[in-house]
Each structure stands twice: as C-alpha cells, then as structure tokens.
Image (cartoon, rainbow, N blue to C red; front, side):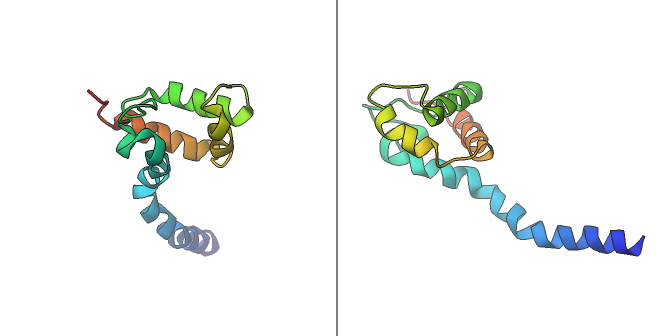
Length: 104
C-alpha cells in the first residue's frame, strides 16, 4: 500500500511542472498562427480569421491540411505547418480560437 501511495505521489510531483505550463500552452501554440491570421486569430484581411471559429471546423481543417486532403493556395504552407502539431495540440488551439471574440 505504501509503495502505491509513494508511486502516486511521485507521479504527481513529476507532472506538476507540465500542469503548470498547460495554463498557457494553448495560447502559446496559437501564437504561431498570428503571422498570417492575426493576433489571437483576428485577421486584418487576406487570411481567414480564426477567432470565434467552431472547434470542430478548426480541427477538421487542420487535419485536412495535415493529411494533404485540403489543397489550394493556403495548402502551400499549411500542410507543412499542420504536420508539426499532434492531435492534442490541435485540440488546444481549436479551444483557444473558439473562445476568442470574432473580428467585427
């Protein structure tokens, strides 16, 4: 019993820094999109805004870029960028952008 308790405590302590970092992880990942899609996903024109975008739609588009299923001018760079994110990171960005106020 003590061994299991010690193992659980060790796991909690070992993952504490990761949990503390998670508070800003979505925002930090989303910041990579700012060059093209604007700060917090609010585009100033030329590219679609990501702010306020539905999570499911964002995830589907990222996965389409990642798999190569989506083509067109945006796919030139997006298919390369999307491949750099795992499913969890895409979900975090989808949640972040869906919570942002859309452009007016």
